[in-house]
Image (cartoon, rainbow over all chains, first blue to last red):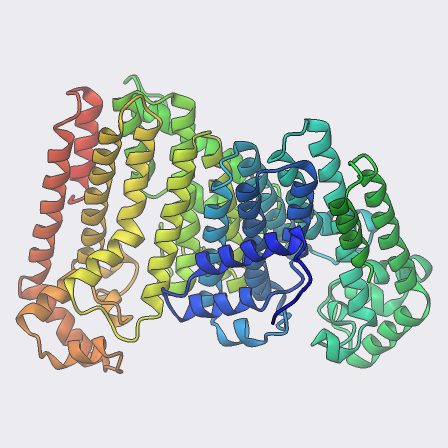
Length: 318
Length: 318
């Protein structure tokens, strides 16, 4: 498609990230690599690499290393996505139902490992020990969080556990994207730490909104039944806000204690959460995270890329 | 146990590697971490970290970074072992039948990922970009090799494919152990490249001997039926040497073409391979790799640790 509009810096940079990822994933090895290539090409929002690139552009990161960081973050996300599908059995991601449905657990494990190794090679290219350390710390945070989650004897029943969990599974990688981009820029530790905070806040809002959409979106858009998290026994913010006002609700208590619940009772509970204001309250919390994040950006120079980063942050609420 | 014998440098160093691994694996997160801790503690031959430590001691690597390299290599090996169990379904490793038998595929995937993240943190500690790059390249070689292997339309039927495969799955990690230890030492590129060659050669012998033992060991020692590789459709060096002299053997051809073979025919073939000299010929090949490896060591200064490294290399034939 020919466009007369000059591409923005983000678009230009992003094309480089896409090429780099496709080059690294290749397709030479096997059917598995071809499938992984297809998964990566199918895209998704690419919000993590976009946050890295915009942050690096604002702060003056060297382009080549920044592109490799952005591609590494996207590949780490893909690796986690593939392995995560094994863990939580929600099959439809990025509009492609192919992957784990078609792959055996062994093949999915291997494909995820392959994505990890590509991420590791890309991050090493940044040639920054600080970035490499942060990358492996973040991987560790994400995996440890998931291990804590799957070995829980009962479901999450309080905000503290929920916020810890979504930090480890989502916000930590957003914080990596922005703070590593700052580390590749000629700025001091204070700016790195502010950008880490910014990434964390936007990542928290991002996960809360995903959890809200699980209740509010149409089944067709979701590609899975409404309230799927709760049906799988996973308790998220809207359910926790409902619990606040209905602490003894028998169905919710049964889910927390990992007891079987029949479909009728589940449907009732999901409808109650959708209609009593719990989802709106969760959206409000996400909005507060975004506002706090935008306030952090006030320290940055006022320039077009800053507006783009602000718009990207606001788009999380959508 | 109290011993009056002064510990050798290897033993001293090795105790540090063990403590480091146990510290990193922790046990805080979950049942999964506890199981992983148990798997790591159960040991195994630890030949990879021993090769790293002896090489580093001979060449003058700084102790702390060397210990972290050795621990990283052992954790990478553990990660691959856990994921590999999903892939090849051989269950009994390190004398513990617990792991994948007890873990779901999802849990085993996660536990392996956790081991990967520990390896990544440990290797970052070496603070050497050359070592970090080699580490991620080696991970990539191993995973790509496995992907090629599982997507083969027919079994291996020639020496070139077999040697490529065992390089990627085993010898590449041995080469990493020795060459990364050299990279952490005050030596030039030529020594690094010689130690890489040494590690590769010993690793090739190591895998050939494992493949030989699959045919020659007692079922009790193996913890799986004799000829298990062939029963799983995996063709290794003894079978390839048998193929040399019996190119049209119908059972072997059926296995190569991934056709079903009945147990009686399989038992016959395995007995034929055990008794016609194919396994001895494979041992001879392994011995040649060891001899070539020992010749590489002639370039090193003559010192007690060099003798220990030679003994370790020879122990592969056992």
